[in-house]
Amino acid sequence: MESLARTLSSGLAEHVEALCRHYLSNGRRCGNYWIVGDVNNHAGRSLYVRLKGPLCGKGARGKWADGATGEHGDLLDLIAAREGLNSFKDTLDEARRFLRAPRESPPERQDERSSDRDTVALARKIWAASGPIAGTPAEAHLRARKITADLDPASLGYHPALFYRELAGLPSRKLPALVAAVTDHRGEITGVHRTFLDPARKDKARVPSPRRSLGAILGHGVRFGKIDDLAVVGEGIETVLSLKSALPELPMVAALSAAHLAAWEFPCGLRRLFVACDNDAPGRSAARRLLLRAEARGVDAAMVSSLRSDFNSDLCVTSAYTLRTRVAAVLGGDHSGLNRCDLFGFSVTSNGDSDLPYCEAHT
Image (tube, rainbow, N blue to C red; front, side, top):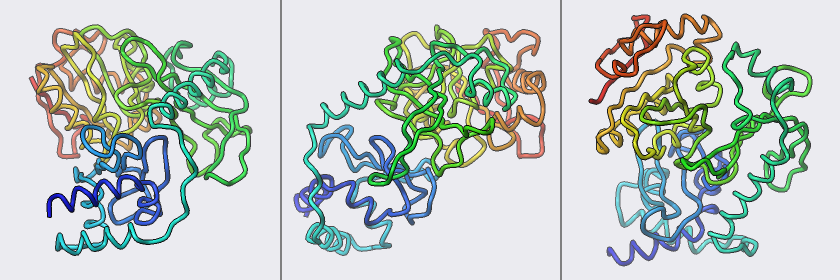
């Protein structure tokens, strides 16, 4: 039975994207992942399925996880959860049925490594074609969100006309975009993140998915400041820049999503980590998983959640000074100048009634 299950699982992995389109039709492809709300096929971005990688072992395609619930598994587990199957035999029968069903042959593709190299190369071309952000609609968009932080030209740029296509096969159009460089710990560009902008307003474009990543994103991020022994890591670019507006002296990284936050790679020499998560179940779950990984590495780590949906929402209804004061109070430092040595000697929680963000510390 175990051998049969392994054979079926490998067969499903060979058709992972077709499987996602069949069982999780309300999701969409995003780079090397299929993104959807949950195993019940609700729209959203909590559950992600790996579309590329080997058929088995570490980094295998078909592996999936739900950032909100912590559920994870392979494609047999996904089929069982989606179809509500309680019997392993029924799950294997459903897998056989899917594999026997006729489907269009996918177009020939290059090997996986070549494809990954191609997306990184394309991301680097987009970054090279982007200009400085100063004085552009991209800067105006961020300033309209009350972000006052310095906009590092090594991390942020602007492209006046990037191609946007909602789905494969549909016509594309050109939109202005805020472009962010995704880098590894050596500073090499591994991808880009694009925020498509409305040509007429200081806001995101009115399209279904205005934020998109390209290239090798997992484990990396958009960096603001040089990391030595301490780092602040959060999800989105606007979230991290909001904290940077309040705490400009701290080095920060935007991991770009809850799933990528949980998988962020620790740089050598990191001793203290401050995880800033969005105030939702996927964000808190991802932050806790990162805390556990930090604890296993011997890194002092703490997490703090925004009071509203994210830290930019907090900033927009208050001020950078208020945000700094609140975070400094949680971290145990003076808001006029945070002391790095005192950042992690605390454990504060809130039941939702306090003015302080929820916070946990691992020391």
